[in-house]
Amino acid sequence: MTTLWLILFYVPIDLIDRGFSHLEVSILISFFPLTSLLLLFPFGIFADRLSPKKLVIAGLVISAIFLLGLRVVSSFWGLLLFFFIGGIGGSLFRISLSALYYKFLGETNKGMKLGFFSGFMLLGYGLGPLFGGSLVMRLDMDSLLLVAFFVLLVPLFLSLFLEDAKPTKFHFGAYRKDILRKDVIILTALVFLLATHLGAEQTSLSLFLKHNAGLPNNLIGLMFGLIGITISVLAIANGFVTDRVASRGRGLAPLLYLGLLFSGLCNIFMLFPRAFASILTLRLFHVFGDSTFLVSQRVTVSNLFLAERIGGNLGLLDAIHTSGMFAGMIISGAIPGYVLPFVVTGSLAVLAIIPAIWLKPKF
Image 1: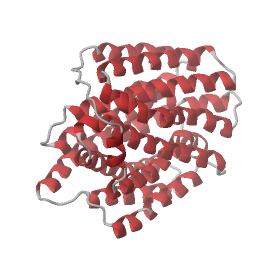
Image 2: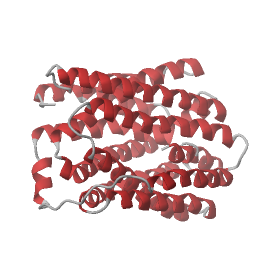
Image 3: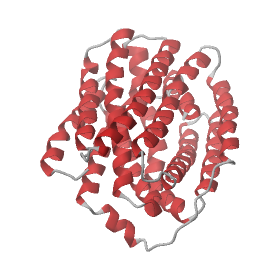
Image 4: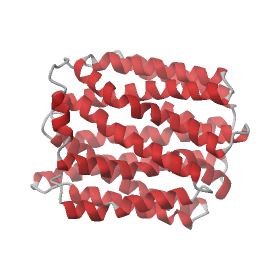
Protein backbone atom coordinates (compact mmCIF):
# COMPACT_ATOMS: atom_id res chain seq x y z
CA MET A 1 0.00 0.00 0.00
CA THR A 2 2.88 2.37 0.71
CA THR A 3 4.36 1.71 -2.71
CA LEU A 4 1.01 2.05 -4.47
CA TRP A 5 0.14 5.39 -2.90
CA LEU A 6 3.68 6.65 -3.33
CA ILE A 7 2.72 6.83 -7.01
CA LEU A 8 -1.07 7.11 -7.30
CA PHE A 9 -1.36 10.20 -5.13
CA TYR A 10 1.05 12.28 -7.23
CA VAL A 11 0.22 10.95 -10.69
CA PRO A 12 -2.83 13.29 -11.06
CA ILE A 13 -0.66 16.33 -10.31
CA ASP A 14 2.00 15.15 -12.78
CA LEU A 15 -0.59 14.50 -15.51
CA ILE A 16 -2.22 17.92 -15.05
CA ASP A 17 1.24 19.55 -15.25
CA ARG A 18 1.87 17.64 -18.50
CA GLY A 19 -1.24 19.13 -20.11
CA PHE A 20 -3.92 16.46 -19.59
CA SER A 21 -7.41 17.74 -18.74
CA HIS A 22 -9.11 17.00 -15.42
CA LEU A 23 -11.56 14.70 -17.24
CA GLU A 24 -8.69 12.79 -18.91
CA VAL A 25 -6.95 12.42 -15.55
CA SER A 26 -10.19 11.14 -13.99
CA ILE A 27 -10.56 8.57 -16.79
CA LEU A 28 -6.96 7.38 -16.45
CA ILE A 29 -7.07 7.08 -12.67
CA SER A 30 -10.50 5.45 -12.79
CA PHE A 31 -9.17 2.64 -14.99
CA PHE A 32 -7.31 1.32 -11.94
CA PRO A 33 -10.49 0.57 -9.96
CA LEU A 34 -12.46 -0.23 -13.13
CA THR A 35 -10.13 -3.13 -13.84
CA SER A 36 -10.56 -4.26 -10.25
CA LEU A 37 -14.33 -4.00 -10.62
CA LEU A 38 -14.27 -6.48 -13.49
CA LEU A 39 -11.81 -8.93 -11.93
CA LEU A 40 -12.18 -8.90 -8.13
CA PHE A 41 -14.98 -11.46 -7.97
CA PRO A 42 -13.24 -14.02 -10.26
CA PHE A 43 -9.94 -13.34 -8.46
CA GLY A 44 -11.75 -14.00 -5.16
CA ILE A 45 -12.98 -17.33 -6.51
CA PHE A 46 -9.41 -18.11 -7.62
CA ALA A 47 -8.26 -17.40 -4.03
CA ASP A 48 -10.73 -20.04 -2.79
CA ARG A 49 -9.99 -22.68 -5.41
CA LEU A 50 -6.27 -22.10 -6.13
CA SER A 51 -3.19 -21.13 -4.11
CA PRO A 52 -3.75 -17.65 -2.60
CA LYS A 53 -0.02 -17.35 -1.84
CA LYS A 54 0.93 -17.78 -5.50
CA LEU A 55 -1.76 -15.30 -6.50
CA VAL A 56 -0.30 -12.72 -4.08
CA ILE A 57 3.12 -13.16 -5.69
CA ALA A 58 1.62 -12.87 -9.19
CA GLY A 59 -0.17 -9.65 -8.22
CA LEU A 60 3.07 -8.08 -7.02
CA VAL A 61 4.92 -9.06 -10.22
CA ILE A 62 2.18 -7.52 -12.38
CA SER A 63 2.27 -4.37 -10.22
CA ALA A 64 6.02 -4.10 -10.86
CA ILE A 65 5.33 -4.25 -14.63
CA PHE A 66 2.79 -1.43 -14.16
CA LEU A 67 5.38 0.81 -12.49
CA LEU A 68 7.96 0.21 -15.22
CA GLY A 69 5.35 0.71 -17.92
CA LEU A 70 4.41 4.19 -16.69
CA ARG A 71 8.04 5.20 -17.28
CA VAL A 72 8.04 4.31 -20.98
CA VAL A 73 4.69 5.65 -22.23
CA SER A 74 3.46 9.23 -22.50
CA SER A 75 0.32 9.07 -24.67
CA PHE A 76 -3.18 8.89 -23.25
CA TRP A 77 -3.85 5.43 -24.74
CA GLY A 78 -0.49 4.05 -23.60
CA LEU A 79 -1.14 5.25 -20.07
CA LEU A 80 -4.64 3.78 -20.21
CA LEU A 81 -3.18 0.36 -21.07
CA PHE A 82 -0.77 0.38 -18.16
CA PHE A 83 -3.37 1.63 -15.70
CA PHE A 84 -5.40 -1.40 -16.82
CA ILE A 85 -2.39 -3.64 -16.10
CA GLY A 86 -1.85 -1.92 -12.76
CA GLY A 87 -5.47 -2.54 -11.84
CA ILE A 88 -5.00 -6.26 -12.52
CA GLY A 89 -1.92 -6.46 -10.31
CA GLY A 90 -3.38 -4.38 -7.50
CA SER A 91 -6.68 -6.25 -7.35
CA LEU A 92 -5.06 -9.69 -7.57
CA PHE A 93 -2.69 -8.82 -4.73
CA ARG A 94 -5.31 -7.20 -2.51
CA ILE A 95 -8.03 -9.82 -2.75
CA SER A 96 -5.65 -12.80 -2.49
CA LEU A 97 -3.85 -11.42 0.56
CA SER A 98 -7.12 -10.47 2.27
CA ALA A 99 -8.65 -13.88 1.57
CA LEU A 100 -5.54 -15.60 2.93
CA TYR A 101 -5.74 -13.50 6.11
CA TYR A 102 -9.44 -14.26 6.64
CA LYS A 103 -8.86 -18.00 6.11
CA PHE A 104 -6.51 -18.04 9.14
CA LEU A 105 -8.57 -15.54 11.20
CA GLY A 106 -10.19 -17.97 13.65
CA GLU A 107 -13.24 -17.24 15.81
CA THR A 108 -11.78 -15.14 18.65
CA ASN A 109 -10.65 -11.49 18.84
CA LYS A 110 -11.72 -10.83 15.27
CA GLY A 111 -11.90 -7.08 15.84
CA MET A 112 -8.35 -6.90 17.16
CA LYS A 113 -6.96 -9.02 14.31
CA LEU A 114 -8.82 -7.17 11.58
CA GLY A 115 -8.07 -3.84 13.25
CA PHE A 116 -4.33 -4.53 13.02
CA PHE A 117 -4.65 -5.74 9.44
CA SER A 118 -6.69 -2.68 8.44
CA GLY A 119 -4.45 -0.37 10.49
CA PHE A 120 -1.27 -1.35 8.70
CA MET A 121 -3.01 -1.22 5.33
CA LEU A 122 -4.17 2.32 6.11
CA LEU A 123 -0.74 3.24 7.43
CA GLY A 124 0.56 2.52 3.94
CA TYR A 125 -2.09 4.87 2.57
CA GLY A 126 -0.53 7.65 4.67
CA LEU A 127 3.15 6.78 4.42
CA GLY A 128 3.06 6.54 0.62
CA PRO A 129 2.11 10.22 0.09
CA LEU A 130 4.42 11.25 2.96
CA PHE A 131 7.47 9.65 1.35
CA GLY A 132 6.30 10.62 -2.11
CA GLY A 133 5.90 14.26 -1.11
CA SER A 134 9.52 14.39 0.07
CA LEU A 135 10.85 12.55 -2.98
CA VAL A 136 8.83 14.45 -5.60
CA MET A 137 10.45 17.69 -4.40
CA ARG A 138 13.83 16.25 -5.47
CA LEU A 139 13.00 13.76 -8.24
CA ASP A 140 10.95 13.78 -11.42
CA MET A 141 8.11 11.28 -11.89
CA ASP A 142 10.25 8.82 -13.88
CA SER A 143 12.74 8.62 -11.01
CA LEU A 144 9.93 8.28 -8.48
CA LEU A 145 8.50 5.35 -10.45
CA LEU A 146 11.92 3.67 -10.40
CA VAL A 147 12.16 4.14 -6.63
CA ALA A 148 8.70 2.62 -6.22
CA PHE A 149 9.73 -0.38 -8.35
CA PHE A 150 12.71 -1.16 -6.11
CA VAL A 151 10.63 -0.65 -2.96
CA LEU A 152 8.07 -3.14 -4.33
CA LEU A 153 10.76 -5.82 -4.35
CA VAL A 154 10.58 -5.89 -0.53
CA PRO A 155 6.96 -7.18 -0.27
CA LEU A 156 7.66 -9.43 -3.24
CA PHE A 157 10.48 -11.07 -1.26
CA LEU A 158 8.38 -11.25 1.93
CA SER A 159 5.49 -12.89 0.06
CA LEU A 160 7.67 -15.95 -0.53
CA PHE A 161 7.38 -16.74 3.20
CA LEU A 162 3.58 -16.58 3.47
CA GLU A 163 1.75 -19.62 4.78
CA ASP A 164 -0.57 -20.95 2.08
CA ALA A 165 -4.17 -22.12 2.45
CA LYS A 166 -5.50 -25.35 0.96
CA PRO A 167 -7.89 -24.90 -2.00
CA THR A 168 -11.52 -25.90 -1.43
CA LYS A 169 -14.18 -27.24 -3.81
CA PHE A 170 -17.89 -26.41 -3.75
CA HIS A 171 -20.71 -25.51 -6.12
CA PHE A 172 -20.70 -21.96 -7.45
CA GLY A 173 -24.35 -21.65 -6.48
CA ALA A 174 -23.24 -21.42 -2.86
CA TYR A 175 -21.93 -17.92 -3.58
CA ARG A 176 -25.36 -16.87 -4.84
CA LYS A 177 -27.02 -18.06 -1.64
CA ASP A 178 -24.44 -16.15 0.41
CA ILE A 179 -24.97 -12.94 -1.52
CA LEU A 180 -28.78 -12.82 -1.82
CA ARG A 181 -29.43 -12.35 1.89
CA LYS A 182 -31.01 -9.10 3.09
CA ASP A 183 -28.19 -8.30 5.51
CA VAL A 184 -25.55 -8.80 2.82
CA ILE A 185 -27.44 -6.65 0.29
CA ILE A 186 -27.75 -3.78 2.79
CA LEU A 187 -24.07 -4.04 3.71
CA THR A 188 -23.03 -3.91 0.04
CA ALA A 189 -25.19 -0.81 -0.48
CA LEU A 190 -23.52 0.96 2.46
CA VAL A 191 -20.07 -0.09 1.21
CA PHE A 192 -20.86 1.32 -2.25
CA LEU A 193 -22.11 4.67 -0.97
CA LEU A 194 -19.22 5.20 1.44
CA ALA A 195 -16.70 4.27 -1.27
CA THR A 196 -17.85 7.05 -3.60
CA HIS A 197 -15.93 9.58 -1.52
CA LEU A 198 -12.72 7.55 -1.96
CA GLY A 199 -13.02 8.06 -5.71
CA ALA A 200 -13.38 11.80 -5.14
CA GLU A 201 -10.33 11.72 -2.88
CA GLN A 202 -8.21 9.86 -5.42
CA THR A 203 -8.92 12.26 -8.28
CA SER A 204 -9.52 15.58 -6.53
CA LEU A 205 -8.00 15.75 -3.06
CA SER A 206 -4.39 16.28 -4.09
CA LEU A 207 -5.58 18.86 -6.65
CA PHE A 208 -7.71 20.59 -3.98
CA LEU A 209 -4.75 20.81 -1.63
CA LYS A 210 -2.47 22.13 -4.34
CA HIS A 211 -4.75 24.54 -6.22
CA ASN A 212 -7.45 25.55 -3.73
CA ALA A 213 -5.40 25.51 -0.53
CA GLY A 214 -2.09 26.38 -2.25
CA LEU A 215 -0.05 23.78 -0.34
CA PRO A 216 3.37 22.67 -1.64
CA ASN A 217 3.97 18.97 -2.33
CA ASN A 218 5.94 18.40 0.87
CA LEU A 219 3.07 19.75 3.03
CA ILE A 220 0.59 17.65 1.06
CA GLY A 221 2.72 14.61 1.80
CA LEU A 222 3.03 15.60 5.47
CA MET A 223 -0.74 15.94 5.77
CA PHE A 224 -1.33 12.47 4.39
CA GLY A 225 1.41 11.01 6.50
CA LEU A 226 -0.28 12.38 9.62
CA ILE A 227 -3.68 11.22 8.39
CA GLY A 228 -2.31 7.75 7.60
CA ILE A 229 -0.71 7.35 11.02
CA THR A 230 -3.88 8.57 12.73
CA ILE A 231 -6.25 6.33 10.80
CA SER A 232 -4.03 3.29 11.36
CA VAL A 233 -4.01 3.89 15.13
CA LEU A 234 -7.77 4.49 15.07
CA ALA A 235 -8.33 1.26 13.13
CA ILE A 236 -6.42 -0.74 15.74
CA ALA A 237 -8.34 1.01 18.54
CA ASN A 238 -11.62 0.37 16.74
CA GLY A 239 -10.71 -3.31 16.58
CA PHE A 240 -10.65 -3.48 20.38
CA VAL A 241 -13.90 -1.47 20.61
CA THR A 242 -15.58 -3.83 18.14
CA ASP A 243 -14.52 -6.85 20.22
CA ARG A 244 -15.90 -5.21 23.38
CA VAL A 245 -19.24 -4.50 21.69
CA ALA A 246 -19.45 -8.05 20.29
CA SER A 247 -18.53 -9.60 23.66
CA ARG A 248 -21.57 -7.93 25.20
CA GLY A 249 -23.84 -9.52 22.61
CA ARG A 250 -24.58 -6.28 20.79
CA GLY A 251 -24.71 -5.78 17.04
CA LEU A 252 -22.20 -3.72 15.06
CA ALA A 253 -24.79 -1.69 13.12
CA PRO A 254 -24.46 1.43 15.39
CA LEU A 255 -20.68 1.51 14.76
CA LEU A 256 -21.26 1.27 11.00
CA TYR A 257 -23.75 4.17 11.12
CA LEU A 258 -21.45 6.26 13.31
CA GLY A 259 -18.66 5.78 10.78
CA LEU A 260 -20.93 6.82 7.91
CA LEU A 261 -22.07 9.93 9.79
CA PHE A 262 -18.59 11.23 10.64
CA SER A 263 -17.16 10.40 7.23
CA GLY A 264 -19.99 12.04 5.33
CA LEU A 265 -20.35 15.19 7.42
CA CYS A 266 -16.63 15.93 7.33
CA ASN A 267 -16.65 15.65 3.55
CA ILE A 268 -19.55 18.09 3.35
CA PHE A 269 -17.60 20.52 5.57
CA MET A 270 -14.79 20.55 2.99
CA LEU A 271 -16.65 23.61 1.68
CA PHE A 272 -15.06 25.78 4.35
CA PRO A 273 -11.37 25.20 5.28
CA ARG A 274 -8.46 26.55 3.25
CA ALA A 275 -5.52 26.60 5.72
CA PHE A 276 -3.27 23.61 6.48
CA ALA A 277 -4.32 23.32 10.15
CA SER A 278 -8.08 23.54 9.54
CA ILE A 279 -7.98 21.06 6.63
CA LEU A 280 -5.88 18.62 8.67
CA THR A 281 -8.27 18.84 11.64
CA LEU A 282 -11.27 18.16 9.42
CA ARG A 283 -9.59 15.22 7.67
CA LEU A 284 -8.64 13.68 11.03
CA PHE A 285 -12.29 13.73 12.13
CA HIS A 286 -13.17 12.31 8.72
CA VAL A 287 -10.82 9.33 9.06
CA PHE A 288 -12.29 8.57 12.48
CA GLY A 289 -15.48 7.83 10.57
CA ASP A 290 -13.69 5.88 7.85
CA SER A 291 -11.79 3.69 10.31
CA THR A 292 -14.88 3.03 12.43
CA PHE A 293 -16.85 1.90 9.40
CA LEU A 294 -14.00 -0.11 7.86
CA VAL A 295 -13.15 -2.23 10.90
CA SER A 296 -16.82 -2.82 11.80
CA GLN A 297 -17.53 -3.79 8.20
CA ARG A 298 -14.62 -6.26 8.11
CA VAL A 299 -15.76 -7.97 11.31
CA THR A 300 -19.32 -8.06 9.96
CA VAL A 301 -18.02 -9.76 6.80
CA SER A 302 -16.22 -12.40 8.88
CA ASN A 303 -19.50 -13.09 10.71
CA LEU A 304 -21.66 -13.26 7.58
CA PHE A 305 -19.56 -15.65 5.45
CA LEU A 306 -17.85 -19.03 5.85
CA ALA A 307 -14.04 -19.04 5.66
CA GLU A 308 -14.01 -21.62 2.86
CA ARG A 309 -15.89 -19.23 0.52
CA ILE A 310 -14.50 -15.97 1.90
CA GLY A 311 -12.41 -15.25 -1.19
CA GLY A 312 -15.31 -15.07 -3.62
CA ASN A 313 -17.51 -13.14 -1.20
CA LEU A 314 -14.71 -10.74 -0.37
CA GLY A 315 -14.15 -10.34 -4.10
CA LEU A 316 -17.77 -9.34 -4.58
CA LEU A 317 -17.73 -6.84 -1.71
CA ASP A 318 -14.44 -5.38 -2.94
CA ALA A 319 -15.96 -5.12 -6.43
CA ILE A 320 -18.90 -3.20 -4.93
CA HIS A 321 -16.43 -1.02 -3.03
CA THR A 322 -14.45 -0.43 -6.21
CA SER A 323 -17.56 0.39 -8.23
CA GLY A 324 -18.34 3.02 -5.61
CA MET A 325 -14.86 4.46 -6.01
CA PHE A 326 -15.30 4.45 -9.78
CA ALA A 327 -18.62 6.29 -9.46
CA GLY A 328 -16.93 8.83 -7.19
CA MET A 329 -14.17 9.37 -9.77
CA ILE A 330 -16.71 9.99 -12.53
CA ILE A 331 -18.60 12.38 -10.24
CA SER A 332 -15.33 14.13 -9.48
CA GLY A 333 -14.50 14.53 -13.16
CA ALA A 334 -18.00 15.69 -14.13
CA ILE A 335 -18.61 18.23 -11.35
CA PRO A 336 -16.74 21.55 -11.68
CA GLY A 337 -14.00 22.29 -9.19
CA TYR A 338 -12.29 20.16 -6.56
CA VAL A 339 -14.67 20.73 -3.60
CA LEU A 340 -18.20 19.86 -4.72
CA PRO A 341 -17.37 16.18 -5.37
CA PHE A 342 -16.73 15.81 -1.63
CA VAL A 343 -20.03 17.49 -0.78
CA VAL A 344 -21.99 15.20 -3.10
CA THR A 345 -20.33 11.95 -1.99
CA GLY A 346 -20.46 12.96 1.68
CA SER A 347 -24.19 13.62 1.40
CA LEU A 348 -24.71 10.14 -0.07
CA ALA A 349 -23.03 8.55 2.95
CA VAL A 350 -25.10 10.52 5.48
CA LEU A 351 -28.41 9.94 3.68
CA ALA A 352 -27.74 6.17 3.54
CA ILE A 353 -28.11 5.91 7.34
CA ILE A 354 -31.88 6.55 7.38
CA PRO A 355 -33.05 3.65 5.14
CA ALA A 356 -30.45 1.34 6.72
CA ILE A 357 -31.88 1.95 10.21
CA TRP A 358 -35.42 1.50 8.90
CA LEU A 359 -34.59 -1.88 7.29
CA LYS A 360 -33.03 -3.18 10.56
CA PRO A 361 -30.26 -5.48 9.24
CA LYS A 362 -28.88 -8.04 11.67
CA PHE A 363 -25.24 -6.95 11.82
